Image (cartoon, rainbow, N blue to C red; front, side, top):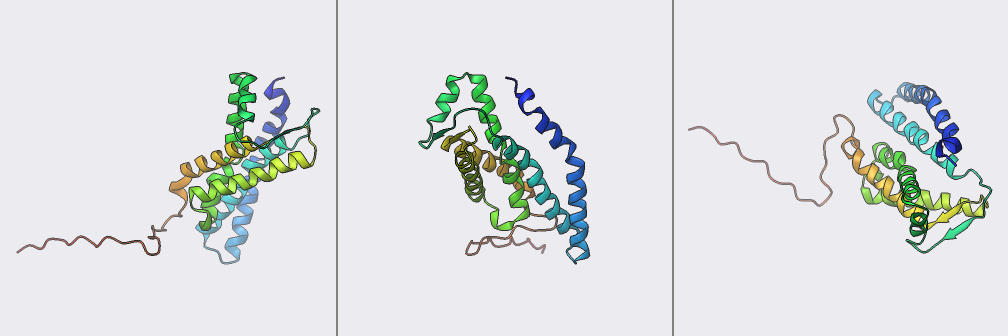
Length: 195
């Protein structure tokens, strides 16, 4: 079974919808600007929201597609990954890489959109919650899938790593770093005067 043969149609549809996603983001930004939101903020929020949707939906589509197989559940951490490794390092690599990417778009763009999520720990928790939801659905809907705590851990790690990579863009243009409440602020250096 080839990965492309099984999931190529999802990849093609996702890429075909990129122009549609761009148009939706532009329309959403224009609507926000008409409602008085500053242009830069409107574009930033719209692009982040549509980006999260466009980068996460194809993965969730693949994950929630039923398979003609018996479902399995692994609730003890690090029991499913060794089973995947037993299938071969290629299979393990494919599974881990895919699981790292599932919520990477969410992890990268959520802190750009929502300041309350600006923190790698917060994104790790968001990724874990989103992944636990998907894994629960795989089990509850009897999709013939493997519901695994290892998938939750790897999905959440992928979201957190993506958040780290997007950190330079968490604040918009013109936004300055604000010290945390209670943090000490170093005094300004005095400029020596000439005598």
